Image (cartoon, rainbow over all chains, first blue to last red; front, side, top):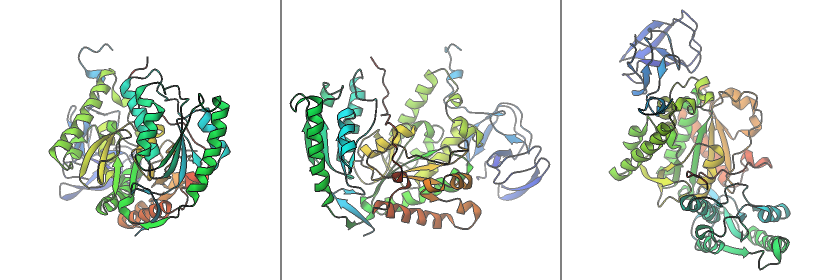
Length: 94
Length: 395
């Protein structure tokens, strides 16, 4: 959706191993999906290191909670939000 | 001239022509059960045991509903549990509504023969008032008299791809015609507040947008929870949304691209024309009554559909006196609940319509409903209670 994005949204179901084309930084790149990407879910366009920010619409939507391989599904299991995180506040009993 | 509406004494224009009976309670409900053409609300929020700020919010909602252009005249009763507080005194409510030039009648069990006597007097008054209202004719007026409110919910990928952009197209068109449009849901701008602030009409408004988002995020953090356990809601996550920031960045598309003229409180009337952000809460029992109190004459719920499988009937959210439209771009949602849905924009994803064509079709739908065609929700006699957006503790 934006040149600085490192994820893209699937507008149809992507099967494991399927090769998809994605507009990325002024060119169209092809990558192989390492797993199923359901309609409306996100696929990693690059290797993303743990702690690295994840961008969609050119904006930060969170950071990687673990290393994410290019072509894999990006969702709540490997992306964590950085906003409204009361659980990370100092002095809060958990 | 684009739609046919009811011109009120203060120059505002109604898309409907109701007699409103308030506050909520057995007197209002009994009068409305007897007299067609009347409206009331069901709500537990009458003000008793509430702080001054919350009581003022309730007063703002009741006064705002009375002043709404869709209301021809108002009956107020003095028997609400909150009526003893200065903010909610019936005389105060009556005076502020009557300032719009409308007829306002006050009934009081203490004076009118007890509860039964007040109901009988109310029925007599209401019959006369709905007859009087029926003598008013619709007149041709322009889009500058439209005042819109929107919420998106159960959002999924179809919301971002086609549903919200259609609303955005409509919002831009109405704002360009000097009409008024409101959007809100403060939690759902966290992560996108900087993008909205860039669209503010002045640095002051930009500061207000950032400030309401900051306060809301502080409240979220004060709970000690990861906000993802609350919002995005489970249906959003099931639809592919991974964080609150991601949801927010998609959600702001429904507001179009016009400059934001100001930040309003829940139920607050916009001071001018154009696009306004409302510091409100996404709850569907809450948000539409707030827009109605602010003077909206059309409200819309843009529905995704992830997580609502099996819902073949979509009842309208409580907007009291304002036509409520369902819009969706999700083909499964549309197919499942066809007679509930006013507008479908999945055509954009299917490639049979451009986003502009879909937006124009939504505009024509809104104009028809504004002129008297029923919103689909108006073909169902069911009303949920209104949850007034109150934010302080109860005592």
